[in-house]
Length: 141
Image (cartoon, rainbow, N blue to C red; front, side, top):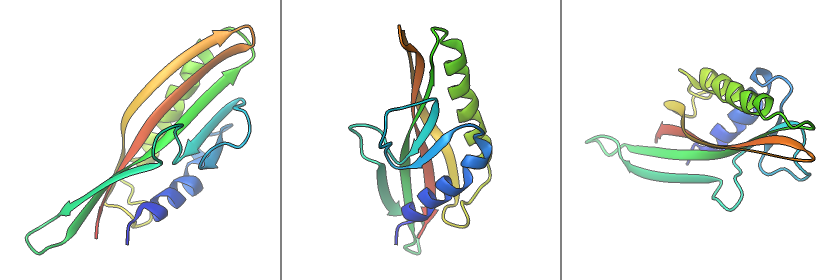
C-alpha cells in the first residue's frame, strides 16, 4: 500500500506546533484566505499528490517517490508586503527543519521540501503572499 495517506496525516498532525499562528488545513480551504494558512495536499488546478514507483533493488523491492503539493498564504490588511513575504519564508524554513531526518512515523525513508514558488501582491485591501511548494517523500515498499 502507498505511504501517501500516512505521510499526509503526519504533516497535518505535526506541522501545527511548528507554525505558530498559522491555520493548517488537511486539503483545500473552504473559506476565503485570511491571515496565515497552509493547505496540505492542495494547490488550485494541480493534483494533490504526484507519485512514481520503481524497482529499489535487485531483490524486487519497490521505491515510491512522491510530492505532496501544498499551498501557503499570508495576508495583512496594510500595504506592506515585507511582513507577508517574511512570514511565508519563515514558515517554509520551519517546515524544512521539521522534515529533516524524519521518517514521518515510519511512513517514509526521507522527506524534504523539493521546490517552492512565491508570489506577492498588494491592493487597497492589503498585502498578501502566496507560496506553492512540494514536500518530496521517498518510501520503500
